[in-house]
Image (tube, rainbow, N blue to C red):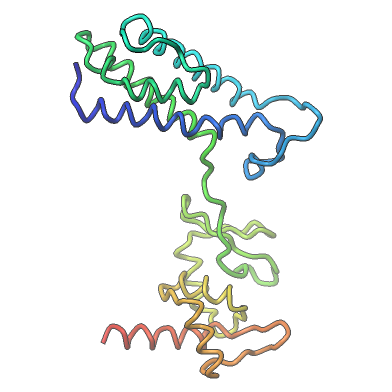
Length: 240
C-alpha cells in the first residue's frame, strides 16, 4: 500500500489521460504543423503521425491490462468499456484496487505508468508558446521585427536573424525610444517590455485627449518616447 496523496495523484493522471486521448487522435489527421492539429481531414489518406499512433497503442495496451485485472479480481466490474476514454476513467475510478495492493511494487507501477503516459501525451499535444513580437530589429537598416522567446530569454529578428538577450533588447529599446515609431498595439507591447504595462483603454484615452499625438496619420504611428513618458508619470502618481 502507498500513501494517499500519491494514490490520489495517480487517479488524477488516469483521468487526465482520458481527457487527452481525443487530442492525441487529432494528431492522426493530416496537418502542416501543430497549430493545424484540429482541422478536418481531407478525403485522401496520407501517412499517420507515427508518434501519435504508437502512443495510442501504448494507451490501449495499458488500459486493457488494468481493466482486465478489474474484471478478474473484482465482483462488480462486469464488462470492459468499449471506448479507450471510458476504460481510462474506469481505471481512475477504481484506483484504490491497485494502490491498496499489499504488493507495493504493483501500486508503484500503477502510479508510475500513469505519470509516464501523461508526460508522453503532453509532450505530443501541448506545444510551447510561439515567440511574441517585441519590437523593431535593433540592427541598423534591417526592417525585421524582434520576437521574444520567454523560454530562452532571448529576442531574435525574423529577417536578419540577430539574436540578443531580452534584457539587452529592452535596454536598446529604451535608448532608442526617441526615434522609434509604433502603432497602438506595438506601443502596448513595448511599454510592457520596458516595465510600464498599460491598458489599451488608457492609451486610447491619451490619444483622444490629445495627451499624445500621432506622428503620422496613415498609418497612425506614435513616438515611443512620448507614450513612455506618460506611462512613467502615471506609474509615479499611482505609487505616490
